[in-house]
Length: 175
Image (cartoon, rainbow, N blue to C red; front, side, top):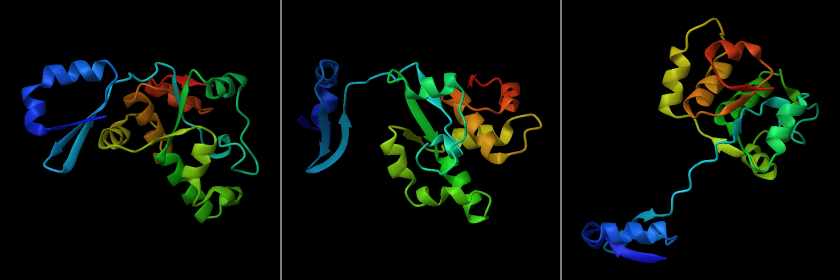
């Protein structure tokens, strides 16, 4: 890993980018303080799936929701990257707190650990997701589902869900 000053980076940007393209990582520093790191870009896989919910986090809950073979195979396929929304953790914790999902006890407070165990990646909620979720037309009233649909659309992910109501939003639903 190479460390360069901001001034040197501005002066030699073309050369530094060629090094990054060749696989080198470059750290940008202002004085002795690290500011940023240039790393080779790896475009996300086109095969991204998203939307594990409730019992879909098998092993974490006592009564896993049945998944279709298609959904299960897509999540298990190592060529795909599976994401779980922060909205899913929020929904599970909320339903556990109000007594609607007592089987979630084993994962409450351990959600990140469970995601890592099953090689799922976290999908944080961004402002763009929130704006879209609040602006989506239609009758679907569940705010958690609206957030998941907005994230799937915004991030161009296939949305793993049994809920056929999502189809009316034009999301690429997988089940």
